[in-house]
Length: 196
Length: 196
DNA sequence: GACAGCCTTCCTACTGGAAGGTAGATAGAC
DNA sequence: GTCTATCTACCTTCCAGTAGGAAGGCTGTC
Image (cartoon, rainbow over all chains, first blue to last red; front, side, top):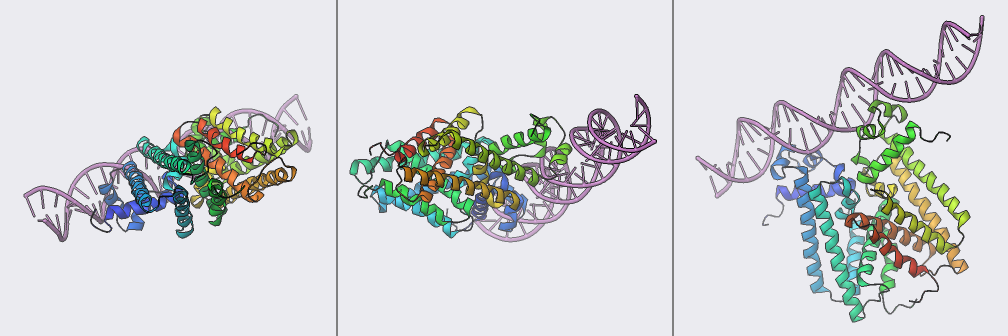
């Protein structure tokens, strides 16, 4: 955790990029080797099997998300602002990078075909995201910062589903703006002052 | 369109089932051969390449959807009821079959890694679904059967995104009920008489 | 009615390449 | 001298796709 970019980090980074474009079965060790600039066999030194690689990738992805959200919680207190920042993060990812997609959302669609260890990590990510969003909804409902029309848990799941579905649509249409277009009314609906 | 189940129909059916579990790269001709009970080479007789197979599969999928919706429109007039039936269709699919997922939603997540011909068909499906949902929203807004808080087009996209995201969540959690749980408030929000 | 040709469907057998993974050697760092 | 990271070279398995032929059905024509 000292060096800026160790080889294994580079492997993980390029694997993530490749997964984001084509999913678990959409990339090979040869693809990574070509990007990183080492040989296939060298990747096996860092990650004995493809399952190992993707499992640690998703694990790391979740840990990063947890850390990022913990940091966000310290900067932003207002629940509505938290949701806006969350949506904004994805909107930015989708517009910035060339092939942006939540790794776990993409892997979730392939769940039944994934190695069990990887599938378990993906499920854990969903549980984490859902738990956090639920806590945000609860705080918003209590403090009056959010206007919920259902139970916090249900609102959280619906919000997450909107984000994932909007990602899919942005990819299908090839127009990143559609993500913000879909999320805007979703966020407005949760805003208390806005009249309906 | 006469015989109940020709071999090519069986090939398409098993390919669809396989795609629904693992996506485009998650199945092979050998997998289909094992299910249908013929040899790999015989599949190439019906569909020269994998691209041909999946392209016709998606094309057929869209045609079936178009026909199904045309039939639905004749039975049901009320826009809200149309949306409920649409959501109910997917809820039933998810609870009935073992591995249920909208083929096109799944393929959309792999879009950048798909053969261009297949990608074009998937995009066409999204455009069709979006256009139909938009028309439903427009009719609902005009007739007072739906209460929209945004433009019909935006509501349609948001609705579709919710459906796709809810599918993903149902798969991730392994609990089909979560689909209905997410869709219920979405539909209620569009219902005019229900107070908020 | 019988034979001839053709078309459809499926087969066996194969190809070249890519997949994930292994064995063993080399070179540098501590 | 051992440990780490990388290499070359190789293995096995699987992949999509091809070549060529066998079996059966349909449709002519005599």
